[in-house]
Image 1 (cartoon, rainbow, N blue to C red):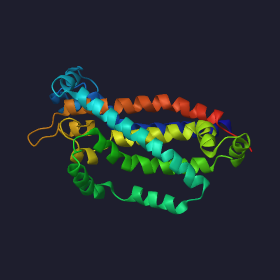
Image 2 (cartoon, helix red, strand yellow):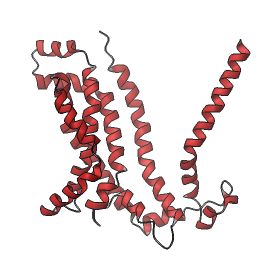
Image 3 (cartoon, rainbow, N blue to C red):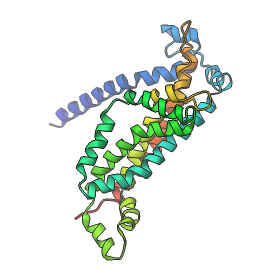
Image 4 (cartoon, one colour):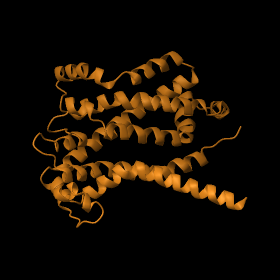
Length: 272
């Protein structure tokens, strides 16, 4: 029996390793290619064994002024996430507590509708008011994706909280808004962090709205990476270095937030 369990464990470990390698191979190739020259990237004999170079990263920041695009992407992603939280958390709480399912359905439809259908109306509106190539236009357009997502994630989270906690707060003299800000939000930290992280990632990686509404002043990272593609050739080394730069902040944020999500779930758990 023990030997059979050991065999099953080995098979499970090997299967997990194969799946992990299959899904992580594109990222491994991207990371290795960012330290190669164009000739090394095209050579199949130098996939793992090659002389690394940092010229791709140096060129990305010196020749392409990539730090400006990093700042633009961070401002837009952070602004859209904060704006979505300010509007989305009270909306999700109201929908969950007052059973406003029809309003929730409307928000869900807004999330389901393809974002490309909003491009022309957004561009016409923002061009009329002179907001094209501004942070305001990009933040508002990215909230079109982040706001419905945060609302729908937090609706289920608020519905799972026990009503007794809120009733105790009301008995102690808190207003409904006081219960929301002082009691509900602190114990909802895991859901808030999770929805904020995913909303930030959606905005960070968004290409569609930025390609229409962004200009030279507000160009974001996905648009900057797209500029590495040309009809004559593709600068694979710089492209992979830029892709690594885009991926790195998201990985760092996810690793840092993971600890807070776990601790928040443990501290915010309530047994009825």
